[in-house]
Length: 341
Picture 1 (cartoon, one colour):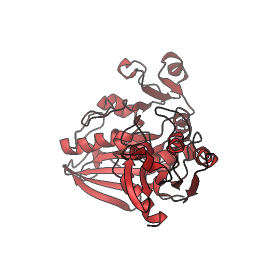
Picture 2 (cartoon, helix red, strand yellow):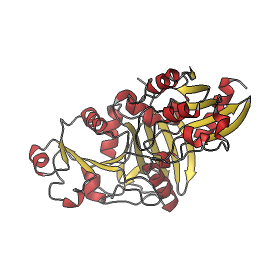
Picture 3 (tube, helix red, strand yellow):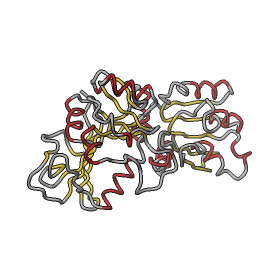
Picture 4 (cartoon, one colour):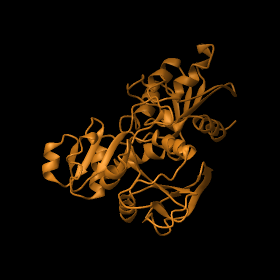
């Protein structure tokens, strides 16, 4: 059994993880091999819980079997103590003989340090320099590589291309099953964003409700350049950020953040706050602004069966090839990825 074959088993283990459960932690898988046989597999199940390496080692009944064994892990073992202990320390304590790593960790708290700690303990390390973890965890890798959140745009529209029947009036387009899929996507995000028009018209909660979560709610982010929400205290809670160019508003409301009006500057600020992933839910003008600025990575369109005939148009034009297309409730869920430019 060669390294690439064993690493593929580790990736398969990582794929079992629910991205909504691991949240801001990456999905990671690990496989332990001794004397040519797989003796354990594991993966990271939930944010704040044991990592894949420890999960795999805990599957081994006799810890003596770990001595001299080889571990295949999709991402570099962490070398710092966070919500759980450092995985590199656990591997050293178990006296593994060799560790094969699929991809280095982009997190500066980890990058290179996990490898160094293992090597200093006399453990042989092979780094395959694959991109499998980046494919499994695009938001995690994008954030640490760019210091900006991974931006996903989301839009629900009628079959004839409208997002609302009339300006200033909310229009319900998705059914319960489609809503559950949308909330499952929300559960994976660090933050959810809307524009001030959507905030005033729909009064959205911007929370995860239709699916269970084990982590805190995402941040609510509202783009309100003019300060239209100044007298709407319902939006002023601890996990809300309101970006505005209205200096007076920014000075009077703790949740208001002054910025220069550029979406790139806004993303820089969110990145500095540690927000890894951002779901932009509308309205149409805000989604179009992100498209025009090429500041998005993924676009989710929920093309519902509803027919409005007239109203507020959604996004017009081809944004790229459809990568996946699945039926969910009354909507056709289409996913588009932005090509690098």
